Image 1 (cartoon, rainbow, N blue to C red):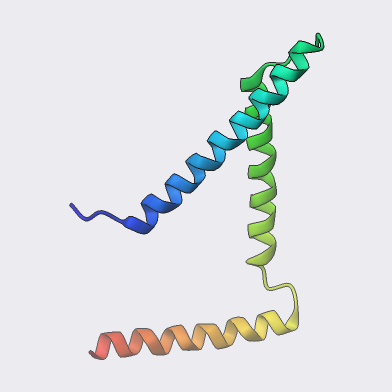
Image 2 (tube, helix red, strand yellow):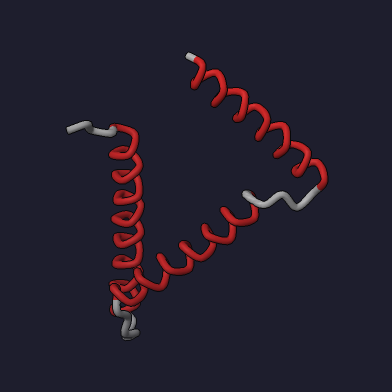
Length: 92
């Protein structure tokens, strides 16, 4: 079985982020409960992760779109480079 170290690092990073976010929200909920406010930690963690997920989807979409003429030209150059690279790999 082939173990992908980079993928494992990425997954560990996302788990650490989720754990840190849960810790921060738990601390905030504890403080809120001390002042009489009712706060469900799981609900707030889910809301925070959903909002961050939405932001990341929009961010990724925006930066992967060719919305300017320069970006379109750059994409054409990149496509040509990739085609040449594939040709070299097939020939080798």
